[in-house]
Image (cartoon, rainbow, N blue to C red):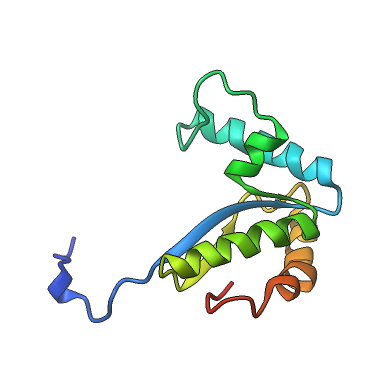
Length: 124
């Protein structure tokens, strides 16, 4: 493995905010998919809510960008403001994308991004 140190870097490290998203036209389906993902991730110890916490929609909203395009646009706009304040250059939206990944990608590109584009200097 190569020796990586600060002096060997040719450019500064970038700050990227990675967010999990569950997006769907069907609000309940988006929350259901986020809930399944949270349970799966907890079983792998990737992350978990504190023991005994019920995965309600409110708890899932703290863990994911989740809901309809309008709901996720509001959440993403808030995150973009935080990302800009923290000096992030990019936001990465990741799994779960939603109950239907193709629908989520379509909604993200055709509905979500246009709703929030231009709000900050952070790229989506």
